[in-house]
Amino acid sequence: MAGIDNRTTVLLGHTRRRTRGDEQVNRNNHPIRAGDVIGIHNGTIYNADYLFLRFKLRRFAEVDSELLFRLAARAARSGRMDIEWFKERLRRCRGQMTAVLATRLDPETILVLKGNKPLELRTHRKHRAVLYASDPAFLDAVLA
Image (tube, rainbow, N blue to C red):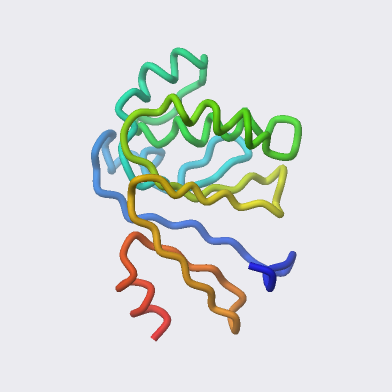
């Protein structure tokens, strides 16, 4: 990670196995943008509907994943991400979660949330990239 600087470009992508929300409606597909936050999530948050109401968050999509990025956007309202505030709200999520997200307000920070879903990371020094996937075979194939 020490070799990554302000010339690095971040690309977030995710192939989604539908759990909630019609994949024909693009706002249900990843990456999901919530204000200044963009990210991807692997998993299902079973109590997302309740937490949207509990935290009084606006909702634009049907997918549970949106909850994570709405919370992150609220945590980053003043610029830098308030990690402790964000973590406290994440503790209330029930289900499975691994996610990667970034905010335009704090471009030097990329949050990697390694929960109870698989996540593999690789670096590619020549292209100054960090790649990730749920299965190492995908990364090995790309890097080969």
